[in-house]
Image 1 (cartoon, rainbow over the protein chains, first blue to last red):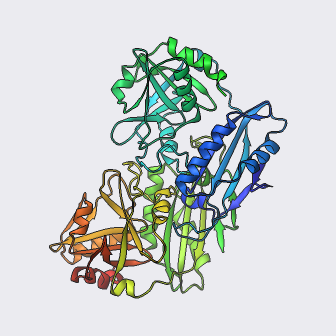
Image 2 (image 1 turned 30 degrees about the horizontal axis):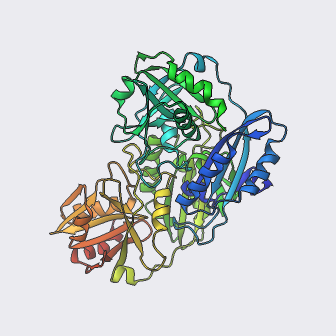
Length: 269
Length: 269
């Protein structure tokens, strides 16, 4: 079932600005036992994204009601929320009082092999750059062509994720994950000041690091620093944490610190 | 009237990748006396954009037939073509054989005051950066949030266009136009290697410059170079050429070289 502005529908107006200009945001949320996991974190990110885009964020209660309606009876799945600036005429300039479009849809839970968690994944090195834009960095907008083209680079099944760099050759993120490296006991992750999406699971990993007293550095990271890392892992709200076992023909063990994060991921609300 | 894959429709599938990820392209074409102006140039840009995105470009004859159907009887207007990678499930990775969606729609011709051509326009200096991405630069993709946010910066009626810079403070383009400056008889325009859209009218301006033996430099341009220019103008397929009469409180006359371009714009096919 799909709800568009609260009504069961499967089509949107062709003049919706989400389609015309990528003028909107989205969230992808885990459903487990009829609950939307980390709901408040996702809604908070949506609210911050709306601020950046100058959009009126839909009322949280309305979103929650619509979400509840969709996830009733679902033990495992994904709910996706799209917010757009709504349907208008041609032209980039937003109207003064846009009627935002909200789209909530249910998707099946993906089958993820246990080996990705136990032994790690193979990380591809993407050539498609992550766009640099200090105003939009961090926000999960509908403009995701970078990720689409990056995922097109490798044949499905040969790698499980791809690492993306900006045009300055700095590490930004995975195509659908955030990336962390561990070097001499310290956790490093790209600061995402001018590119990338600030993931909910990234936030949770940083919180776990603080609880576990693991030093954190949010900084610029080069490809060499990834190669030379002791441990590498990627994360997002759906997969949680995948250790990396191979990057650019180098092998990595699933290290103790990565294991600590995996073991603690379920304990953060 | 709107044609979606050849059928009269006004709604698209909510799972269309154009909406989900900005995964597509568009063209905005002038209609005059039942003709789509510079049709072959627009289709060629669409074809090149499809190559960058790894999309199968719709057959030109089909696009032409659908265009003819829509513009019959129209003496002045705009036809917009959107091509997306079509409807799929969740996930950035494109399917192997996507059914692209093509959307052709008719829009009214905007009223443009004659004074914009005779005396020039006021150019705002935008803070929203143009995204840097060397792979997508030049292509008119559906990911246009930069332009949407840039146009939101000024109150309608106070300026007619806004100038955009990338995060390296280089001039890229107007929010809906390409920009040219003239200094000591030479035409300068941003090279758009890593940001911006390569406009059809930009291409035509460069062709006119070659015909008129006006030297061209496609290069990096700073804000100071714009301020210090002898003449400034912006252009696109709909407005053609607007001289700039004001930028950052400095006044500019409509210069002889800009006039030459305006006078010659109608002579290029």
